[in-house]
Image 1: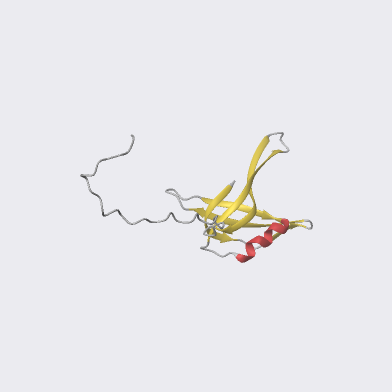
Image 2: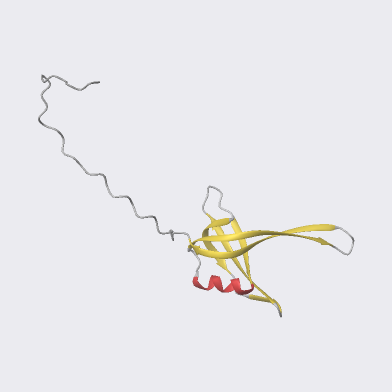
Length: 122
């Protein structure tokens, strides 16, 4: 899946534990009702955000993650997160295939005589 929009916020890297780090990005979509989407980048993917700044138009490849948690009272809760794994400038287009050569242009006929007999068999 992908989210396309403008970078609103890039948070600094957070060291959550000795073995886990994350960095958050907020992308504002450009639609009739803009949405502010929080995307988490984790571990080595945190460095992908170093080359981007607020206001840039980006396309972020994401995975939706869901988990279940049972609290001490025995109640089950569900949580969702959006995890980014690639980011690129939205204006960057893939190179297109070379175009086919243009059809030859022929000049218009000027020596038409409507009085000549039509000798076509159809």
